[in-house]
Length: 261
Image 1: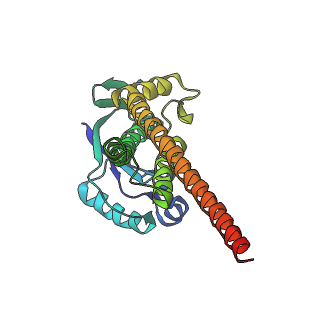
Image 2: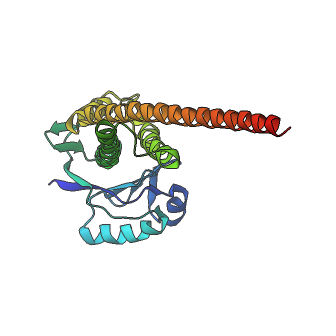
């Protein structure tokens, strides 16, 4: 019988060391970025980038675990960015089988469950980053529209720098946290896990979605680079006018002094 695996975006980031010291379950794998727990054929996966995934838990058990994790979340906001998939553990199977949005795994294949939850979580993370990227794109588009209609920018100084920093942070978070093009370490020396890894990436369309976000980020960066050039030119022109005015004042002052003398 299949069970639902579910991933949720909970926060901007999760304090992994604090979770590790608090949660009282069997830790299958843990490092500074993620924790993978096993608890009587139930699995919990926690990621530093704010996503948590579950397999085999009831709704009540999930709610209890979320309350345990909540104190370690930065900017907790249990959002509606969630995703589910069916996973069935089969006792008489030796190979993983992918059937559209359903995964059949051997009963003992813990690393297969880990891979499935990993990609489910990355899919949710991509939805979150896509939302941030789209928001930044809308804001950038608003400024380019104003530039087109009025021939000048409506943003500059600190506001422009903050906008640039926001876009760079989105791209940095994606690059630092998501394993989209590289095979995950559990699949490096296992042909079946490598096949599962590639199949799950296709099911969730991870590579194409990742490329779309990165391309959108590059378009935004090009626009912001143009904004910076315009702002620099404006500042340079302002300085030139200040210098010209100071020279004129000096000349007028010298002329008046000569007249007086």
